[in-house]
Amino acid sequence: MKKKMMTFAAVLCCTITISAQDAQEVRNRTYDITLDKVQYAHHGEKLSAGEAVGAVLSGVLTGQTSVEASKYEDDVKSAIVKGLSGAHRFRFNDGLLRLGDVVEDGNLIVDALITNIQAKSSSRTWKDKDGKTHVDTWYTGIVEAVLSVKDAKTGDVIANPTVRGRGNTSSTFSTSDQAIKDAINRLSNSVTSWLNQYKPLQANIIQGATAKKEKQKEVYIDLGSNEGAYVGLHMGVYEVSIIAGREAKSEIGKLKIEEVQGVDISLCKVQSGGKDIKAALDAGTRLRVISID
Image (cartoon, rainbow, N blue to C red; front, side, top):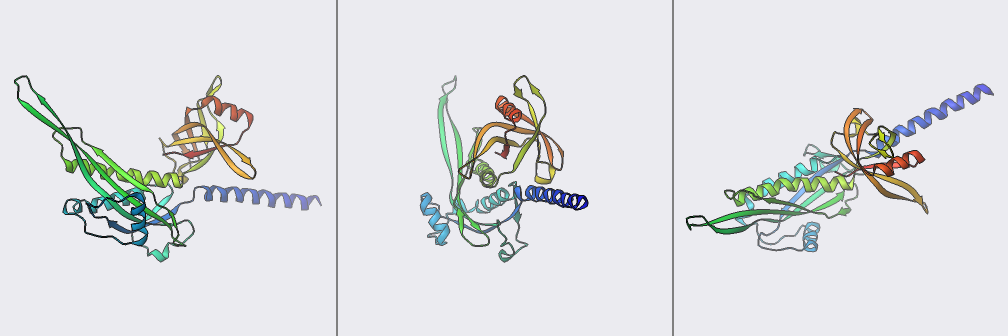
């Protein structure tokens, strides 16, 4: 009987260990993301957000892209690709796979409608000490697109986020071209930011590190190099509770990874909420950590 109990305990131990490993993998699983269609609205045609979404879904556009905007089209497409490639939990499909090969649960296909490429100018007139008039001109570049994010397996549209890039020139010798290119670069960040909020990295605080009086200064989390942790990543700290069978989260602080110490562990600096985080750790409250970059 004793031998049977020991065997059962061993099996139970292994089962628990495997389940924990599986949960770790599922928690920050990565997915494939593919850019399918990129279309351009008529440069002189102003579209509302609703009209832009409709155009993406139907694939129907009127008119032609203006000559002025057309020279930036490839750059905007490249910026969108860069943004899709930079997200924490997505692998960009660069065309080596056909759409039919990326139909697993969670994989995404993205269409893009570029709705705006323009530069606005502002100027200031002034006179020097000799009474000569000068005009300083600055430019603001604006690039906007609406994405249609679809489930690769079902084809259902999950979301239609509007992504934007805005570039400002600070030199009076700059040009509208520079402002637009700066905006295009910032568009990439907007795409990546949306995806990172849609599928953030998640972790748990596993142990407090340094503390001072009633405030937590550093903590350890169970996120390491295997799941994409890197120095400088900002994360929010949340108390988790179950209300009527539903999970509720309440933010109590923020962290920044200061050292990745292994495949599944990192040391974080507490940037805010040190008092609440320490109180929660002392009380044994479950804390979840979610990336906010």
